[in-house]
Image (cartoon, rainbow, N blue to C red; front, side, top):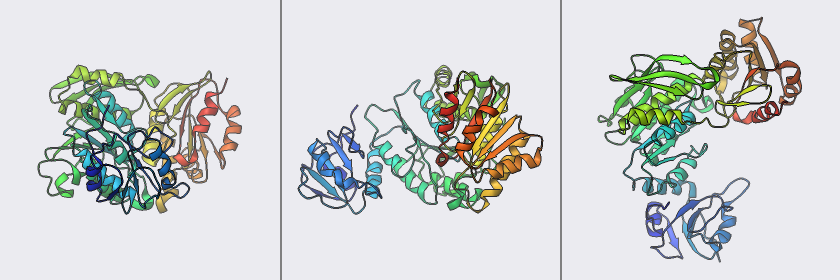
Length: 463
């Protein structure tokens, strides 16, 4: 697949740079940041880092066929064109904005404290039943990943699904300026990145910056079950967006897109009727947990807006596959493991434990520290433990410094709960054989820095 025509002259003008060497009408065929990849016809992005400076690889990539390098300083004797800019990270965002504007296609921007990636993957699966879909790869959802994602658009793509993650004020405005979404989705306002955002009100303010960039005639698709989103008005945040419509989705019947006849099918997923207007669409969502129902609802709303038939929407939902580390059910000969270890905050942990409690047999939650929760970190961990005590969970293993408060909160409210706390991951792993039982359903979840995928690997190796 080919990029839309993008010359060195156009790229230089979009980034307000200075082109030295090369031919102005030479075409950029791809944008690459990793010098180890195939760089033929590429604009190579030289990012200075703490450990590695991309400028050190400019001469090599140009010699190997890159059409140009984007640099902050001229690399003398490099055999090819260079575009010089004050800051390569700022410049690539400007280029991404220019390039995205070349596409007159639906662009779905997805943010929220919980469920961004699951919604993105479900959305791509549903829309993929009819369209050629471009989506965010992995977790490239920040101020470097988003422009690289946009620059990955190709002429054949008919719709783009872009995940947008932030941790501070102003970031969403910069992301939205590039993405220019025709549909902006907010999945939930939760307790995340509180070191910078302060509290849920701060999270709300930061996430709703997305409204400023919605394209004329677009929609804001919001989780109507969220207490901060159900009465949200786009024009309260972005007064000029009078032609942007708000659409609510959620489990509750007052939402435009809601569910009826929901039935838990255990690890096999959930069956329900997706309802909107006078339509009722029975579906089988093949991944367990309420968060996936929300993802299916949001995807259905976008599918309807883009003219998909109910049959196409249902097929896209049925074809969905879970992503590793995100509510992915995997099995060893002894256990069923819910691998949800990619990241965690209080909202996502509560949702995952609630989902675990719907599964049959003995249910075990292995939980670790949650990061970036600010001065209320201990209280938020404690409250998470209190929630766990109210769920139908048989055993709890907490690992890490902060997770001691999860343990304390759970035991304080339910002293009879079987629970243990370990300061170190290695200590917990050593104790698993004596604690776990054949047939256990085990949730594994913590913030990324805890590297709980190591626990998943240990459990899967059990024979």
